[in-house]
Length: 375
Ligand code: BGC
Image (cartoon, rainbow, N blue to C red; front, top):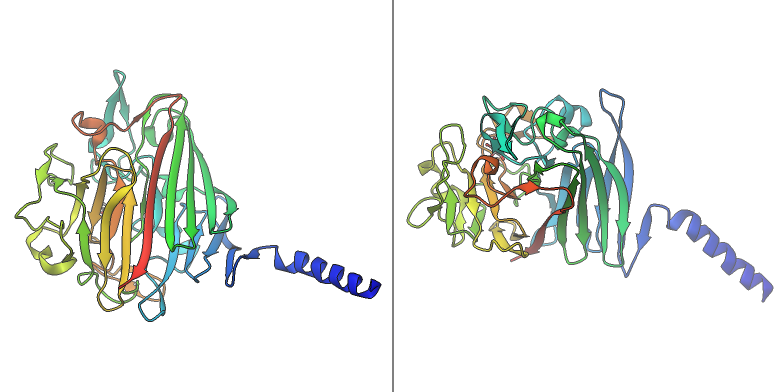
C-alpha cells in the first residue's frame, strides 16, 4: 500500500517538473505555449519568440520585437497545415527592414498627411517616413519596439499579452501612452487580437496589425485567386500620395466592389497600382461585426475577420518587389494581401471621419478576430 502511494507521489512530482513547465495539456490534444530566445537587437535587447498551439494543432508564432506575428499554421480541407502569413526567417532580417510583415502598428496605422495635425489648438509635427507623410507610426514605430510579454492560458485558449509604454514626444506624438496588445489562439480556431491604451495627455491613436496573408500558403505565389468579400458599401478615395481626399464614395459598379465574394485579381488591373484603400465598414457602432471573409479555392481555407473598428485597409502587396527574402522564398508583387482593421487614414486632419482622439481618463479598445475554417 505504502509503496503504491510513494509511486503515485513520485509520478505526480515528475509530471509537475517536466509536464507543466511550458506545455499544458487540456482534453485529448496538447495546447501549449513555448518560448525561445530569438536573438538581440542592436541595443542588446533580448527578443523572444513564442509559439502558441491550440488543441487542433493551429500554431501562431509571435515575436516580442514589433509584436510581430511571424507565422500562422492553419489546415486545409484535407488537414494539411501551411503557414499562411509572410515573414522572415531571422531577427536580423526583420531588423534590417521589412514592409511591416505581421507587425503591430502604432501609434497610428497608415498615413497622416505631411506628418502634421492640430489638437486642442496645438500643432504637432510627427516624424515623416513616407515622402512628406507620416506612415505607420513613423521612423521607429511600435513595429520596431521590443514589447514585454506575459503568457496567458485558459481551458480553451493560449495567448500572449504584450505591453509597451510609448513616451511623451515619441515620433512627435503627445502623451505617455500605455499599450496592451493581446494575441489569443482559441480552440474554436480563432486568432483574436485585442488592443488597449491609456494616455496622460490628449493624443491620437490608431492601432492595427499588418499581417500579409495568402491562404494558399505564404510561399505559393500570388494572392490573385483568393476570393474576398468585404462588408463595406463605401471606401475613402485617395490622392497621388495615398492620402484620403475626405470623400466617402460608393463602391457600386466599380472594381472596388467586394460586397459579394470576388477573386482579388479579377479587376485589379483596373485599379491603378493595385488595391491600397480604406474601406468604410457597414457596421460602425463599435460592436464586433464581420468585416471580411476570404476563401482560397485550391486549399479550401476560409478566414473570416470580425472587428470593432470602423474601417479596414485592403492592401494587395503592391510594393513587394522581390527584394524581401522570406521564410525560404522570395516575395514578389501581390504575394500577400493585408486587411488592416483600423480607423481611417489621416483622420486627425479629417474632422468628418470618426474621431481618433484619446483623452486622459479614457480607454482605447479594439478587438479583431480572425476565424479559420475550411470549405
Ligand atoms: C499601406 C501601403 C503601404 C504598406 C506597407 C499599407 O498599410 O496602405 O500604402 O505601402 O502598408 O507599408
